[in-house]
Image (cartoon, rainbow, N blue to C red; front, side):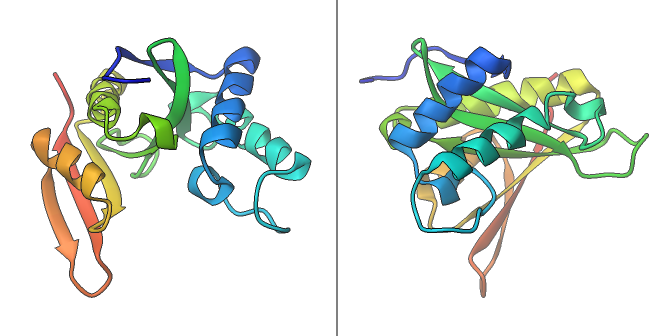
Length: 171
């Protein structure tokens, strides 16, 4: 992909879902992009169908029963990963959304992650929430650096290495 390309968050219809699955299969490990599925390591038909089901279940968005939405990340016209937002407060109180992102190996280190977090902050604000949180590990230096660049308040749990980030929603 080369240098950073324009980044868009795409709602996941069936066509986008297949593009996202292809990105996952060709550029990521299953454990990095979806909840665990029993069986041997690597991609197989069972994991691919579980991946599809996971994303289909979130199509109703933040107001749906799961109170979560996932987007495909498009950079330079290619789907390169996924981003999610999930309510972290009781229904009817729109204060906090948790963000999660995965990027295929070929999209890492190009500024895509920072652009995605900016886009998620805008989506957080559009939802009426005031705060976006994210969790990562101290070893994920790219994610920690991106969150820091965007002004996140970071706290690290020294024994576990877990990093908690909190950002005000973009207005």
